[in-house]
Length: 163
Image (cartoon, rainbow, N blue to C red; front, side, top):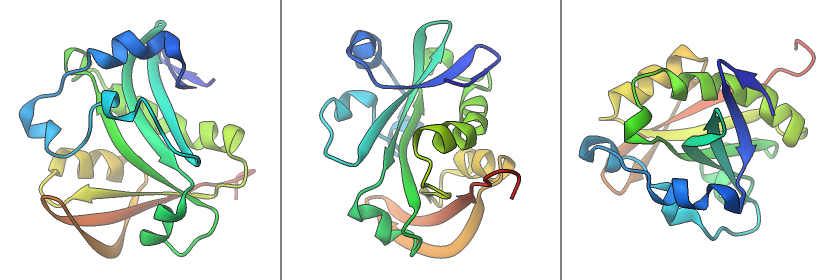
């Protein structure tokens, strides 16, 4: 559990269920991601990660180490990040950026074989593209068609021991 400005990343536990169930997103964001309530059951290789501030869940995302990762990268040690959301009531405070900055160390600790995080971001989702670019994700040049249009595939190489 790494912490930055009262934020930490934790694996899902039932204690967060009610709070995650109450998450809401503005319509313009809901088209690009899924609410945590969609992921109360996951398959092997999917990991529910909760963004916690002062013991309150304020955000959520999934990490995948499933066959689905191969759709985004040829790296066998990569993980896929999906469904990042910050509860509407907690938005605008920099929590998403702080959580993504913690991700490198969290993944190195929890998933030591992982050396890359990949994600897909809709071409119309400019705020998310800017967020990911600011924290070091690079456009791989790969494209994928999603349910509402073209998605850019972005990648963050994780550095181990300063390399």
